[in-house]
Image (tube, rainbow, N blue to C red; front, side, top):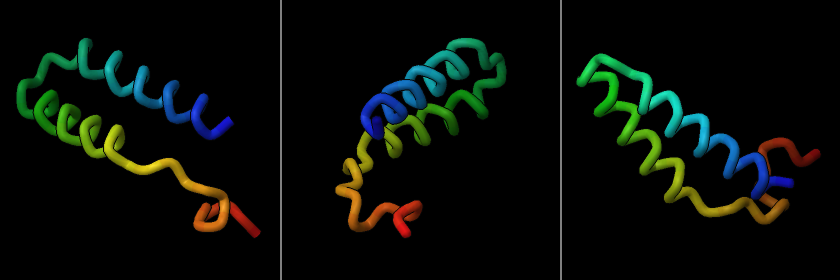
Amino acid sequence: MDEFIRRKNIELFRAKLRREPDPEMRETLEQLLKEYEALPMSGGDNSPIAA
């Protein structure tokens, strides 16, 4: 399920990036997207949601 959510979030980032008219905001979104894509998948132990 985590991978599904990750892929959906990336799709949302890309959609927002395509619609954003402000060049400065586009640059920020591009950077955030790159950082998000580079994040390693959580293994469950380090998940912030884990009890």
